[in-house]
Length: 116
Image (cartoon, rainbow, N blue to C red; front, side):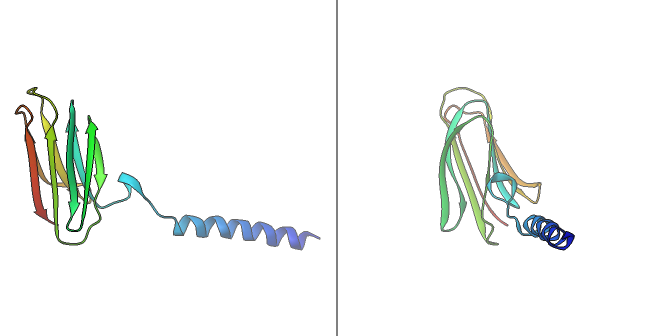
């Protein structure tokens, strides 16, 4: 009578192990290539690789994942206010900043294009 219960327990354990090995990540934490926007105010911009450009609006700090294709990536963001607060945009690969630009100009724009 213990045989079916042992088999069932083994199958459950195997299912948990397989699910952990084949799970996938999504969102900003799973990618190797990211764009990070830091500002105390609101902003709008676009980012991505050739053929996959995304348009976003936001406030404060945000991080976005870019699908890495081994080519050029771009990020362009503009402040929505006339303050002298800093807007900083960084492109990050494997946790390392590979390029960063900033502006404190009223309604200032930051533009980065780089090869990854």
